[in-house]
Length: 232
Image (tube, rainbow, N blue to C red):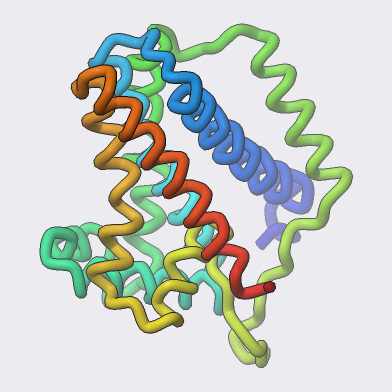
């Protein structure tokens, strides 16, 4: 498709690297805020940020699935399996599962619902939709730098044989836990845990919030180790 759309070979890698950079910066921002114990936001603005982080993860994952190659299909099947095997998440499968056109609902979420949700949460988080011009310049510059320095992972053709299919890097920890024999509902709980901690973080007392912050940083470290365990 990148060769059928004008400048597709430029815009698709740019879209890929800018989204990757966005997620890395977002996770770093959250980790620094929690590590420093800063609660400069109101509780409402903080909850907007948690919902926005979930929207970013959803956008990243749905975009990965929309590639439509073997990696995308495998990652979507793993995610749907996790949701289906988890009682509280099972009802969500109807929002993304489509038996006729596999990526149809993922496409709708990626281009319509999740962008609207992210824009709404950003507005509630920082008070305005358009950030300062400096942030746009830095974001575009760093995305362009990633485009020049690194190559986007190649798609895997339908009939091509590969030794191991890997999902997006932020989903790799969940996949590795499943391969270790951890039950699907336990893996789902591990994945959802940081969002639960972040949601209640501003409502806890100072001492409890410190423990919750330590738990979040410990989770981030442990999940990072599990994510790279496949290559160790």
